[in-house]
Amino acid sequence: MSFVDQDSSEVGPAGESKLESFLFSCELSSKVPFYTFQGDEEEDLEHFLELRTICLGEGAKEESNVVEVSAMNHQGKTISVPIACLHMKSLPMVSLGEFELKAPVTIRLNSGTGPVIVSGLHLIASQAEDSDLFEDEEDDDEEDEEEMPASKPAKKKQKQ
Image 1 (cartoon, rainbow, N blue to C red):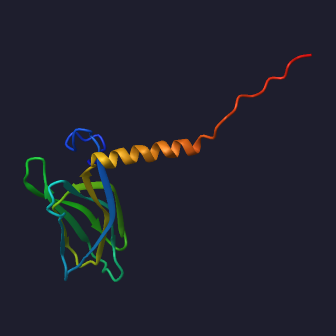
Image 2 (cartoon, helix red, strand yellow):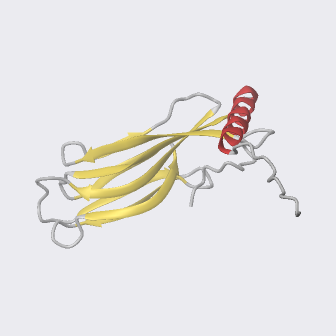
Image 3 (cartoon, rainbow, N blue to C red):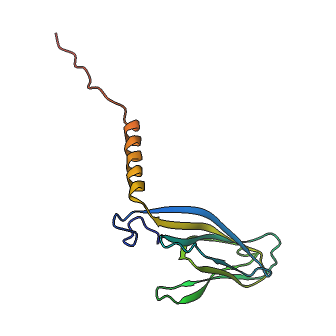
């Protein structure tokens, strides 16, 4: 389920937004037990972290490694939730699907020594400029024209 939606009413009068995605990864260990993801402080941009996988790294010990995230809930309060409990012999990796959180987000190695690699996508949603929307529509029209070859009506043979 994605919270960044093309039909979002918060995005502007046209209801259109521009969504960019970038690869995200961080490594947690006993030396670096947490990572805080924060977006730029620009008013017209919203930053989201979409977590996809969490796995044990090379050299992980045979111990439980618990990973938790801290983020804002719908009331604006920061809450922490465990999202993975990894063990080298039984569960070295977990797939989270499209677990989306709005920045700021803190990912913490709550127990264990790691290393634990967290990966996903950094999503940036911005209002699409009217000129951007117009250009996109023109590009779509041009592509449609190129795909449809001109057709001629078939010639009918006359009976004799």
